[in-house]
Length: 156
Ligand SMILES: Cc1cc2nc3c(=O)[nH]c(=O)nc-3n(C[C@H](O)[C@H](O)[C@H](O)COP(=O)(O)O)c2cc1C
Image (cartoon, rainbow, N blue to C red; front, side, top):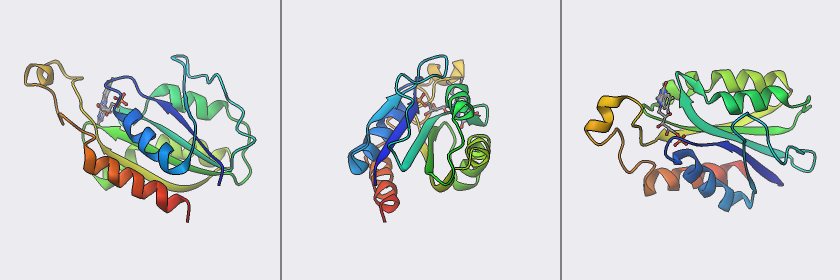
């Protein structure tokens, strides 16, 4: 399986850590999106599995990855997976937070084969900074092991 991962991670590099764990398992290059939601290497033609990951901002993936997904041509059955890190995480919230990106990719003809999320260090609210932030140290080793296991699952 030939995989590539598109990523936008800026708050604390939390989602980058998850992307790197998955990329190691999948032998996938990571393409970091520009601030305007474009990619230097946007040629997905050689890949049959494409990952899309970013932090969560007000209940959706960052705008940059949503814009990038919107810009993609019809994928006709290419496989995709979605991942994120967030200040608050549970499986139900993950599915809700991922809906915007999932719907864009589904409309482009992608087959979504998996979704992953975990907690990420969060200092967005000023008061959080004062108390050292939320989820310090996340993603942690256990989160990254879970990300790797998720990626292994994608290869089967
Ligand atoms: C502008 C902004 C808005 C955020 N909104 C949410 C949110 O709606 N829900 C949530 O669970 N976390 C939210 N967070 C926390 C981030 O999703 C979390 O810290 C994430 O791990 C950041 O990923 P990154 O370091 O890869 O950019 C927000 C963070 C930022 C910077």
